[in-house]
Image 1 (cartoon, rainbow, N blue to C red):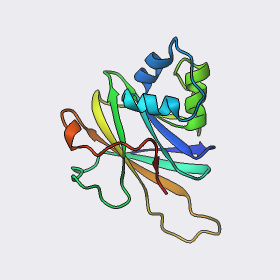
Image 2: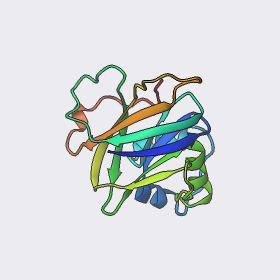
Image 3: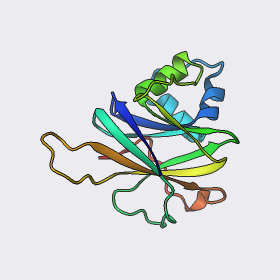
Length: 171
């Protein structure tokens, strides 16, 4: 299991292939008309995202799930597929940093702790799922927002995956 702690400053979180994002925006202009680039990137299997509907500190855990049943368990949302290349990395970033990377960094996000995270990731097409993780304890303020993100190989399973929402709302 891997995890990242990010500051979500706009209520939308993004998973992406580092190589696909860099290739996609190396010499192409970014379209600021939300959510056009996120939707097109998702259709190209370069990235996927979801609406956390909150801003602030977020913890994201990356896990490989047991086999995902045909009917998703309550609270688990299918985000789409990402196609990772050899030597690729999984990027996790809030939408603001996705925008900055694509519009000003040729698809490469700045390495700023808390604003992006990257992990080496095996090549192949991976289906992405997310859910809000339960948090236990007594809190003086609102409990921290924690998401479990599950990625599993999806090669050859396109027919058994759910239809992709434009951007899933997970709360």
